[in-house]
Amino acid sequence: MKKIVLLIALCGIAAGTAFAERADSNKPTTIEADSAENDDVKQIRTLTGNVVLTRGTLIMKAGKAVLREDPERYQYVTFTAAPGSVATFRQKRDGGDLWVEGEAERIEYDNKSEVVKLISKAKLEQLEGTRVTDEVDGAFISYDSRREVSAVRNTATGESRPGAGRVRMVIQPSNKPSTPATPGK
Image (tube, rainbow, N blue to C red):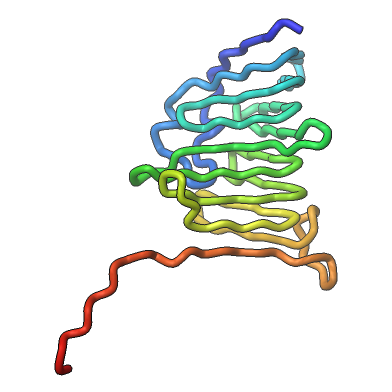
């Protein structure tokens, strides 16, 4: 199929996503896919086949994306992985060569509340350059960028239930040089 490229000037589709670089919110959003359908009455855009969304340093990829816009012009985007795959995102964080990468079978982004949700086989990593500094995985991960609060749950519904599975966090040491001991003290 012929690739369709949409340049969509959606206000803040990526503004405030998890650990977002502030400059990204002022960039245009480009979405590429194998096909697209627009419903201007319902304010819904459906893109299918090798979907790639780019906005500044933010790159999101999935088999399908559905974008909905409310009357106040806030956007809600659901990325769904192609069968046997995961939807992904990568974005630079403020403060140097810092990045965040995530993946899940479904990724939901709510521009109004600035919450991103990773649903089913969810994984989130923070990186300094290429070195992973922290990682978390579980059935469900939610990050509220306004409050800088995250939650990891053992079910894809966002609830935690006994016996439903475990969540896992790996926090790397700071790797700060230790102060040598002074002789005789």
